Image (cartoon, rainbow, N blue to C red; front, top):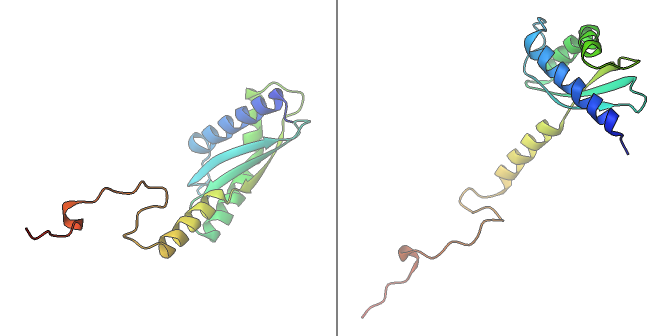
Length: 136
């Protein structure tokens, strides 16, 4: 179980890193980055920052290299924000969750027919065009 202190530190690290990436980093390799979550170790010496990066694999690798080269700058920003004995060392990892969900939606779009309602949609009421004509 993660302590409240570690959770608060992880949230603070996420906020600081997110804002610094948006406002302070001047590296041209770092663009299209979203910080999805942060995991801080129990001793608060390591912070694993999960990022989602838009673009192809080459752009993702370049962006990740840019983020790793700016880790010292970001650690300095974190040390100003959280008052702890140790400033956590930052490690960046690509969060594949967003990419997997897009791929899954694409696969479902190919499998499911276009005109069928989603499986969880309520059945629609019959319209006048669905009723057979009655000859009176």
